[in-house]
Image (tube, rainbow, N blue to C red; front, side, top):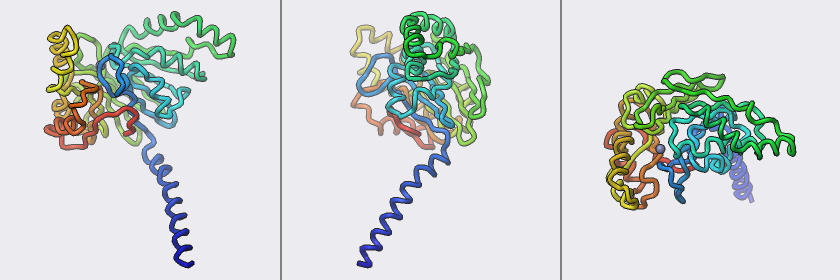
Length: 309
Ligand SMILES: [Zn+2]
C-alpha cells in the first residue's frame, strides 16, 4: 500500500514537472522560428510546401517569403493568421511570392483587422495594388456582408532597393543585405535580432560575402541549399535540361558552400532549407548534413516543413 502511494505521488510529481516544462521553455525562447515551406522551386509537391518561414515574437508573426501554401502552413503550425504583422519577401520569384497576396487576403478573411507591413523588392507596390484590384469583388462583398474593415488601408508596402536596416520595433530589429541571385535583382537576405536570439534567412543566393557579413555571430542561419550530385536526376525530367541545370548551379549555393558560409559567419546552427532537389528520395537527410559538415563545425539541421527551431 505504501509503495503504491509512493508510486502515485511520484507519478503526480512527474506529471507536474512535465506540465511546467513547456512553459519554462517558452519563457526562455520567446522568439520562435518555424519553417513553413522548405522545398526549392515553384512546382507544387507532396513532400514540401513553397519557401516560407515565420518568426513569432511576443505573439506577432513575421513571415519571410510566401511560397505556395503559406497561409495553410501557418494554420498547420498553429500560428493564427490574425497575428500576421509583417511580411518580408527576399526576391520576386514565384517560389517565394506566389501566395504573397493570398496570405494577406486570407488572413483578413480570417479576421485580421490590424496593420500589416510588407517589405521587399519592387514591384511590390504594384503587385499589392493589382492583387487588391483583382480581388475587389470578394473584398467589397465581405466588407458589406460581413462587416469587415476595408483591407487596403491595413496594408503598408515598403519597397527595398538596398541593404541596411529595414525596420525596428519593440520586438525585433530587421536588417537586409543584397545577395546574388541573378538575374533577379535585387534579392535580399534578412537578419532578425531579438533580445533572446538572432536569426538569418539567406533567400536564394550564390555563396555571398554580404550574407556572411549579415550573419556574423548569429544563432541560426537558414540557408538555401543545393545537392549538386542530384541535379542531373532533377533536370532529366524536363525538356530544357541543360539550360535549367546551368541556371540552377549558377544561382544557388551547394550544401558544402552553405557550410562554408556558416563557418565564415561563425553561426551556431545552420539550417539547410529551400532544398534543391526538394523531393529526391535518394538524397537523404544524412547526405545533406554530411555535405555541409565537410565545411562547418557547428550544428546542422535539414529543414522540414513545420519544424520549429
Ligand atoms: Zn527559390
